Image (cartoon, rainbow, N blue to C red; front, top):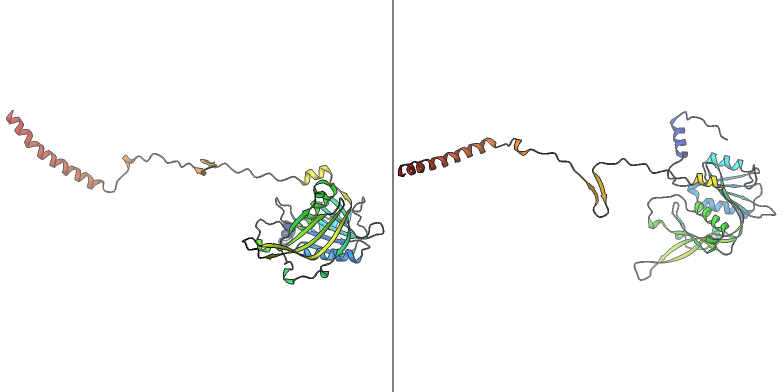
Length: 314
């Protein structure tokens, strides 16, 4: 285990803040390693996976003889490299007489091994073996479609597990908004049998269809390979519960006199105190009073003689 030290300057503190856990993780980095013995096929597979995930991947080319993912005690080096590089997914390649062209794909939680799945690589075709228009080549940072075809992905436990791991490995960074113009490639995973999956990488070609919706064609650009599932290890139930915990939403402070309606939306109440209009000082009050006095005098002058005559007649 690495010794925990307090940061001595701002640069180290910023680096530690980048590695700190967040409520919403944006993306996961991938670590690619190799064992003591690897074939040319495995070296090419690891290099092309690194090429497809260049933005969020780290490749180690040295041989590692102390890594044995499925054996007790052989996970220490993997957990050390995971903590050192801050990678949550790893791909470990090795070959032997019993398990030729072997790939182990795994995930980590809190820099400890979460789950593992072991597959064998067969019928591999590299990118250079495909001929296509170079304009269809995937651009750096583009988001791919991922298609899983076959009922076995829903019924077979090993393929269910492989589906989860491949989604984490291939989807890249999680984004909030997506530009449809940047979707130019797709990973197609086809379940051939209960333990064999065909994986290929295709580009999308848009053609005219006579309508507003274009016709889409798939052009295989590689790599393509068959995955044969050999071993897999699911996480412990306690570890799964801990990893699946989500942070509770912050309780928003209640705003007074504000309510929401399904039809009218957000409604608010405004408190208006008694204005007491009778006590308000009007700007032209004196002029109005003088006018009222003059009108009252005119009325009194017209009414006084008539009242005297009435008295005399009576």
